[in-house]
Image 1: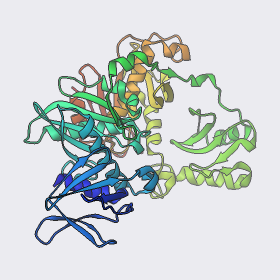
Image 2: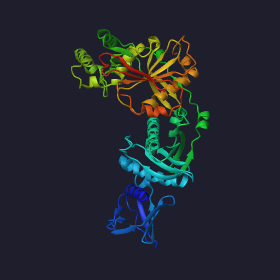
Image 3: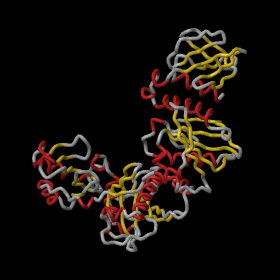
Image 4: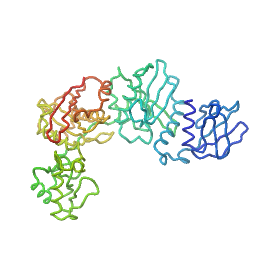
Length: 494
């Protein structure tokens, strides 16, 4: 039955030609023109309505590189699928069709290339109501010599997406399989298209091999290749040192109109740098004035594009607009539904955290606390929410969320790992951070900050599979943090 389901999915998204034992064959049928339908006797039929053809299906199995064999009342039929990229581009399909398209091709590749130790038993995608996790990836179950083996595959059209989301989904799927009555061992197979595995190599080293043994594999559907990824060899050969951009070296843009606004609304507006080439005037984290240079032509108003050029509004209009936004951007707000109040919630909370950093740890040094710290590595660029220093020289990374986020832990661990390597390699001294301060040699601490009940329920599940020795703190603040920030719960994960 499962073979028939995959054959039906492939017929829906790929062109096909059907040939019988006598050599007679159909023309190349477009996707969706043939399919499997239930028969009156309870069986399954292969039907081509446009040609008036119908065959009973007694058995079906993959054959060759791009074909299937069908046994029909003792006769043998061959189905040959055409070139998908030319005849049915995946980019023109809906998301469910693309998933089924790649599920069928991935299944065919795994059956040919995976080897005798793993027998593919199940491949599914889409929403799984029992797992209670969005089915963005292909979920796999294999039969092995010591029991079931869980696996997760990233689709080729997801190759450039965030790897932390995929790794989070993989551990949740692994945990779900391990909780079932059937016996699953501690292996977890991860299938990456192209070079997507490079973005999570460092994070894989943070997992506890006694609880989960990850086997990353790279696949190529076009070339029909499947190979094991050697994590240790790749990490030894890649230049993945962390570097940090020195933001304090670039001064604030000296813009006279912006300085006048800042002076007039000094209690509500903050002039701050960004990781980009412009500065901002913000009101409790909400960007209001973008400053790209020293002249009025370099000023733009608004918090989302398209931004309004400075010259498009009169001076009175600009100040009235600022007064209105500042009045809304406070708690309690006269218009809580307004975008000026709802947007950039994390930046708002971040500004309060930085302004009251000692409430999270008495040893934090406010004068050595940085916001929006850009860091670079061979696998990509990232921006840390808050980086600070303790009195004993130990670094701390704070990742802030105002809503539930499944990938919070791995996203924060990616930042933490960059800071750890940067401190060990002297990246902060080269960039000019913490000038004159001695940095401790121990690993930095990681703080996950969110309002009460906003830390995801799967956080403890994912933390269970991490190596011991990573100091991770969960900090929950009060729900009405906009009015008055207060730490409600502080816990060190063990």
